Length: 220
Image 1 (cartoon, rainbow, N blue to C red):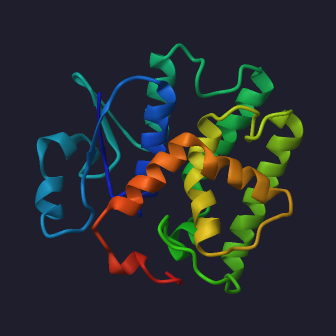
Image 2: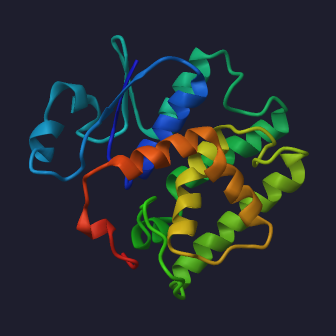
Image 3: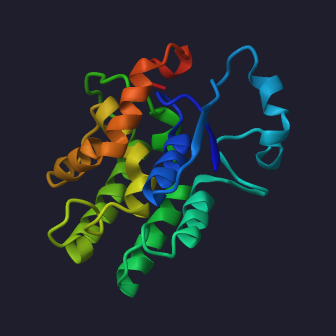
């Protein structure tokens, strides 16, 4: 398998696709494509990006191609026998899939105004009302998952899985911009950030030379 991703410092959807590949346990080649550099538009027109219209992440597995992070999760879930990504309990699995789908389609204010940048931590500022609403909904979802299905584990459904993968970039945003969270949330956020896969990604981001100024402001 070959996974094309954007800059590790900034590309939230790439992080999800990359975490999914790591979670699968299957070998894959990682290809980092610098976002918005002088060759970006030309590179996006290459055959390897054609199925996704130039977007990352995009996963090639022989002749099979999968783009969109949630689709990559589901493809790898099928490929690994449905055992590595979703909870075994049907009720937990239903909730985890619903949460992942909501993350996939929602929280536009948080995404738009607080872009991912895992190399920075900015002083706290009062978020806009729509961002506060997004954070409130995320806290509600996390609390429900932890209360119903977290058990003795450190993650949303006990063990690290697809729901945590989908929310991982949110965790980084909350930290980067020092955004307000519920009292229970830091323990979960720390578990995500300290996961070996996340530590590897963050280390990779620190080693990158690329800087995109539009993502280097404390308000976006």
